Image 1: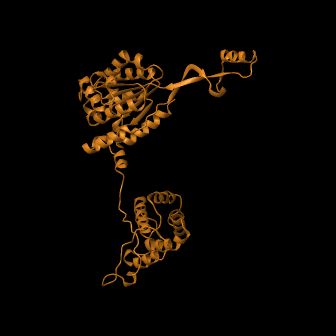
Image 2: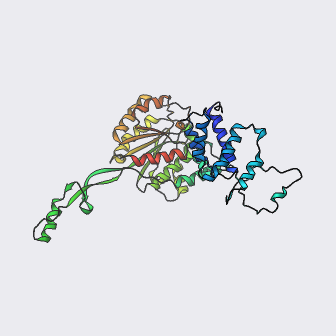
Length: 389
């Protein structure tokens, strides 16, 4: 048996082979076909025995299925299509004891209509298999800029269901260690407990350091180049604010900086976004990232970046300002926070390269450069934030 001409051809043939096996009643699912595809990269598919044994070990899980698999394997990989005998395979499938719900292979009726030998056979349940997919799974990988109005509404619901947890930092404060746990002796409590036993110390009390979630600051670009993503990114900021259960400081900028935190705390999302629309006066304008970050550093950094804050800067990097101002502002912002994460919606495209002068000036001061173009990227961001300590 010759090897397929290329991996895509092999994968396509494996999918077709899996359909044949499912039609015969074998328990073959896409996951097992993917496992087989990966396994074939480790064996010589030019050797028929290696290919056969790898396929059988991953696709057959019942001893009684082996003869049927062997016949299907021989027919699919060795016999030309015009010589396939589906009637023989169909007959073997019907002889299996208690096969359960199966998918009937393409029926081959004899000339003249129904096969008389099947007239008295008991009627069996047949499940029609079609190529289906989860709408949520499809939306999870679809770029925000390509969503229809109906899909936007669905994505907003899915976005609201995301679970956000921010990593905690260890503080300088100490608290009583539960069950005697802790790394520092609590002398005062130890002496107080000893007074209950006539001054005799029976157990040393301990203290341990407390931990608390890090503050989170979001600075989002709402300029004209970000217009395709702005609406859903504001919903993302809203879900992040209410999902963390702690105060999240939110800002937006185009040519000037606007604080959104007060509006984002509203329990009603529509009322919150209406408040944002009245607060921001430079929607879809030009972009002056450096000047807006300089305003943030001067007016807000000391107020919102205490306690080892994490900063999410959302922008595509298109900047009409002075690159030196942007570099200086980024350097100061990076020194003021625990971690500076730049989220770029264009990073989701495999062709994207951060070559704009804004990105070139900013990247040396970025701790993490991540995409933010679909639900999958937001789920990856949630896992990343949870790991920050």
